[in-house]
Length: 56
Image: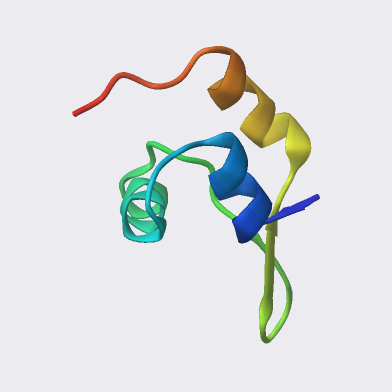
């Protein structure tokens, strides 16, 4: 599981662009582990690294 800081190292977009992409469905939805802990599964992020989504 990856925290947002690591995701943004792998997918070079701003934090606001990332969250807008999550809301629009362009990026995968997170998993809440606690009230202040949000993560993404590696298997959901890996395809974005291998083949990034088209820019809008």
